[in-house]
Image (cartoon, rainbow, N blue to C red; front, side, top):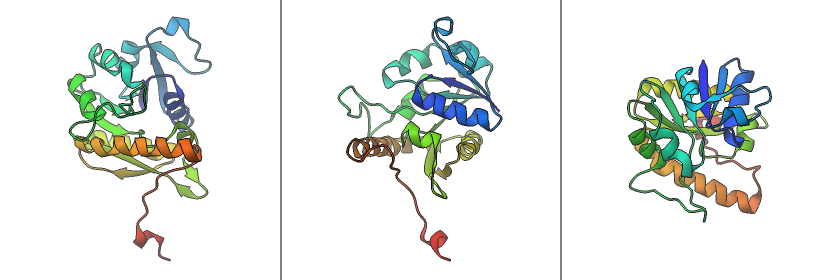
Length: 203
């Protein structure tokens, strides 16, 4: 699968490296690729990364979302939104009645938006198993085909994909991310929020 990642920070590179290891073609979109060194990673302009990809992953800081999304054409693309609407004071900028995921969908006209990869830290994205247990990764969206694409990519990284319903349920996933962030400040980042089913735990 051809994957374009917008954002070369910890989350974007953790996901990109994982998918590259699984044989996916990954390119990183940057606002100034000529000024950056991607090492062995492929850097290009944001617009070019979108055009070259079947799936686009939005992994930029919340403060740059509107600029990055509104200035580019995502028509027909599966757009996986990894963002959390966090203010400099570590509060949610939006929530309860809307979400970052819905905001992204409103800005990216014609895109098939799926919320995913926002409920845990990048450390767990690089190592998504605790022992033999694959960590939970929720995803939410309104387009079933796009959700299936996200499910496959979630599984390829090594998480257990859990369908969290329609995109509006990003309103619950983003506060869940804030809970993980607050817990990690006290307990460190080697933690995860895990969904367990009783019938799967029985011998």
